[in-house]
Image (cartoon, rainbow, N blue to C red; front, top):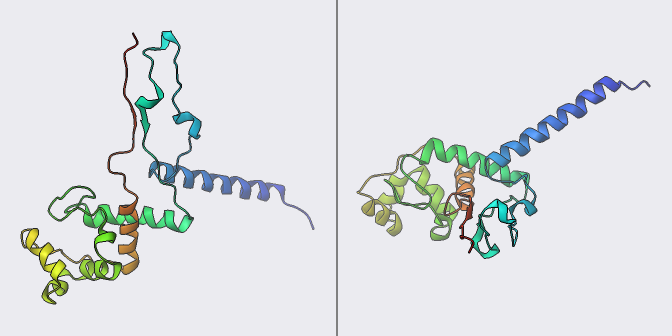
Length: 179
């Protein structure tokens, strides 16, 4: 049997391209960091010609969530797109907009309730559900429209909400003037 080295090289090259595109996409989504941890560590002292000294306790780095599996990463990426397409007009994660803030929704209500609410809030309200009626009344008696989302899509949105940082991920350095 003869080995087709050109075909093998092409397959390996395409595999590497797919891996790089995947890592790049996850990095842009803020799910993985391609920078080594040492990059984020501040030095105790900086050379005098490079500006003020910034003590280590004045540097804070927002942590980046790393999904436990590719399935979790896919759910978070899907949830991001679904949130932007269906939820962002009325909801934010940490602020009330037209509808309530969604941070910790999975701690306030069980998943079956969330799925029922998202799929048909009118039915939940009509059933006399105490929490559903309370949400309806607290939000100007505006009913949440049904977007026809599946249970899996709703779970993906919740997965995305759960990994959202309270503030935008950023490296914050508080400059201290050298004496």
